[in-house]
Amino acid sequence: MSAIFVPAEPRFAIHRSEYALDPITCAPTKLSAENSSIGEDGASFINVLVMTHSGKSDKPGMVWVWAQVTPGRRARTAAMTNLALSMPPSSGFHTRASASQLMGAGAADDPTVDIARRLSSRFKRPIFVSLNNVSTSRLTTSAAGPSLALSMAQADELVALESCLVAELKQAL
Image 1 (cartoon, rainbow, N blue to C red):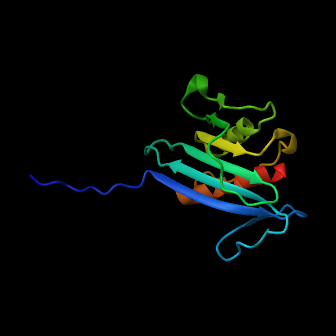
Image 2 (image 1 turned 90 degrees about the vertical axis):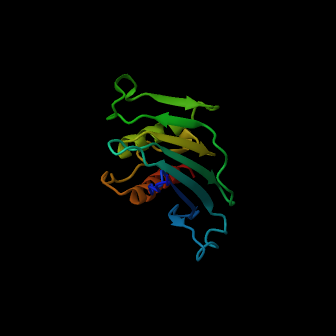
Image 3 (image 1 turned 60 degrees about the vertical axis):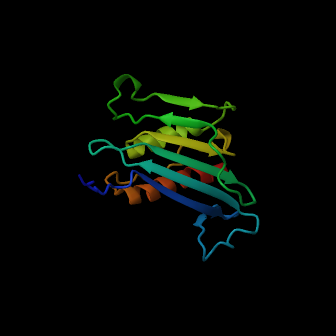
């Protein structure tokens, strides 16, 4: 008896990046190996980690997003804190379709649920969001920016989700 090898698609995709926000214009610049010295002069930084699950053929998998805003210095994305789950309104969960759940929230002005809800409705899939060093009092409600096409490949979706999150978080600085 011999074993049969069946290649499988990877179930998870991970995308990690860091942005520097100019202290005057608040324009985000994505940092890479070539331009890693940008933003050393008092700029704020946004660290983003996005992980997606491929899901099943008929329904998309979940998305996990970790982000941290660090004014004036560089830091790595913190461990999961204030993890919020937002279910997309078009999902088949009926009674839980627009429900949100916040776990570990310590502040009354935590924007995690609102950001998770906006991202989830835009990308039509459940999205877990974890934010660090962000408060609602420094966010505007219309920070989302232009709408995005929802028929993206998974790799494009990671980048689009990241850019939406950075657009939301740059309002926090």
